[in-house]
Length: 241
Length: 241
Image (cartoon, rainbow over all chains, first blue to last red; front, side, top):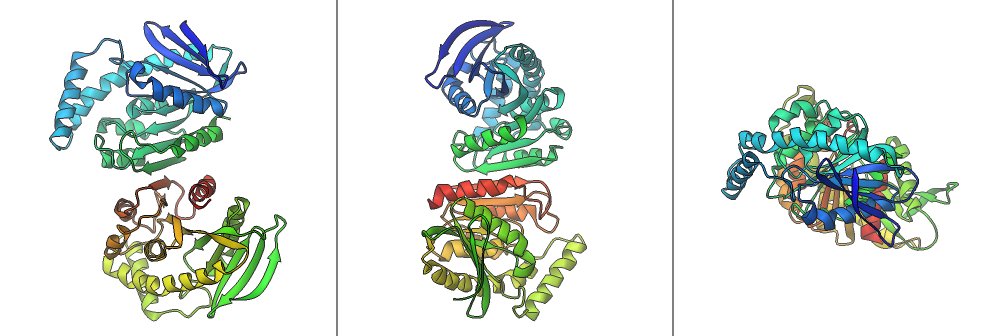
């Protein structure tokens, strides 16, 4: 993990950009004492996502949490995969035509992404937990929900997850969802045009966790109400502190 | 409104039982200054419901809200309706047999209850708002969701409602649900065996409110997690203060 830049905000939060095995990432720490860590999931493209990510990270820091994220495969300056681009184009075509999205398209788009991204997040977690400003436990917050689901199953250091049901999940991953046992808070934007509401409700139903909560709101894909940020902090405070 | 008993709890909350036109009720006030009021909905049977109602009322009072409730038609010592009892028996039979509940049964059970209860709640509201310890605005919190829905449409003094989707609503009331415009927080117990999850989701979809949030949790009909009480208080703090 090599730090490439650092800045301190007026709320005392230290932001450091890093690269790890060629993958760019950002870590935010609220102070010098070891803090629980929240991994911030996102749809890919760190430079474009930065304004929202830094706002989420500083909101986490206000509750005493460190936060970190890494670029997704194919996101930002990372090499695109031709197969993923093709699958994404097929998905967009189906959505634009108002057709049901074939599970085969979702598999082609999501499964390779999950296969590649999850080991990268785990490697990043190794490095992040070696920083003196980060202790444990660890939470995952955000999209891509298929990545969060896989991480919740395979990564025992993740104790709770806030999953944004804003992207497609192949039905073949439902069996995996049944294996999730950590506490979950699932966010669903009820009228998210680029998402499948019934799929999200079925996925919520499939999760094996004894404690799982669904929060559904109006306002479209990017219209998650501000109070959900506070609810998220309280969710993690219950489970990571 | 005639007070029939009063007691003060060690947190300073004053509880007063009353009768109003022969209907028993309870009002809880956190202090002498006018407080916003939350009407506590329940399935009927004040004596049996009292432990849960007083806990909810004191939780409201801790956030500065007054709370009040009245007995439902057919609940507690109030006269039963033969037609309602018959409809309830038909509902129980269908549920026990694992059959889909016919909307006709729900109509027979719920519509007369709504027709009778809603004017009673409005009369109670008149009396409650005349107390010096109660100001406004007013919220409604709890079941029966069909009563809460009707109140949200016809009673302009109600500014926000937390509705517990734990009871059946006739499909004929969906048109009414579309007329609801106040902010809503709808609670759904995901695996509530005596309830119809899809009906609850369809009802949430039907509500016309621009700000509506659904919170779904595990734990069966009576297993609403404790943190939902805090979420409810924050919901009302956003809208009644």
